[in-house]
Length: 477
Image (cartoon, rainbow, N blue to C red; front, side, top):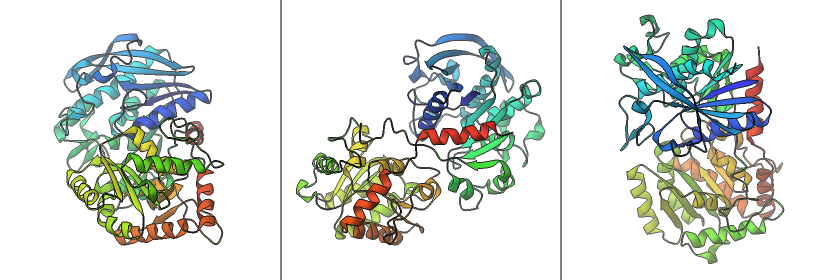
């Protein structure tokens, strides 16, 4: 098949979150399966040095943007056999210090920036001499692509359009006057179109005008059809139920694999778990926690320090977790108030709470390898990746049963010795602590703990499986 993927970020080029990992891994896996893949990205300032070898395909990509006609250029880079990346250049819009904003503020013209990008993608396809079978757009920044395709090229060019929602909380909402930038007839701005409580909602374009709609886990696809998780779009999503599918994101085992991980002290697999203890001792030393307590359980957490990730629950529960006999290793950054709260707890429990505020790629890997358990008490989690990494590292996940966490973590059953982790339902410190207590009790029973680790490390959440699921949707008639 010939597949076009459209998104606002992609590893290894530019990344602010999991969206980049998904687009990078999915593009690579589809190409590895024998399909021709072209991925479109904006040419941000941060990319210009990285893609100096890219070849200009056209410097006259002209699209309407409200009352203006804007011109851009496209540059093509061959990444691998059957895999190319096309960068859309428009310096007025994308030659900036940030991707989406600066100093914690979004750029005020983000609607113009990503409407131009979406329209330019559609306008560029004829210039590529590439006749696609599938056009797969991701998140609100590319959500306008299926709609613009349907208006500009669909009558003469049949293909299947797919749109993936990575996080429904981010919808691309803009003031009403920004609708003029779409160059659509006025009747598109209504409840059955792109209007959302008087605002322009770009995400609705992808939901309404794609042939296939996906969310990044089966559980999340079901959750977003409810009032609790639907962010005001639950009614629309229920009406799209027939085309809505859950496809779980994959884990990148080339980067996250304890057998080959270059960041950890000792590599290991399920046949050499003694080396995991070596990693644990190294982690304790790095975080300045007592190495002589390596016999005691360590609970790891790598996360944005925000309420969505349940970090407020963790902060409230630290004294009880310490009383249960466990230590904690926490890495992340986010809400200044929660950061201060965790810093005070680290000062209060200097031998039991190792904390680093910020992001440290090496330490993230060391926590995955050195911790015994990994805590993810998210209020909502469309997919989640760290629980998948934890399973591969034999670091038993303790999660709230929501979104992709519910799809990947099966509670351990001592009677049948099945399951790969521990979970809880209600988003309270008490229910989280009950799950932690179950995990710690299992830790003290060596036979059961070894079994849950073996179950965890046997799980396969590779991108190959996810890519094959997408192919099934691409190929469906």
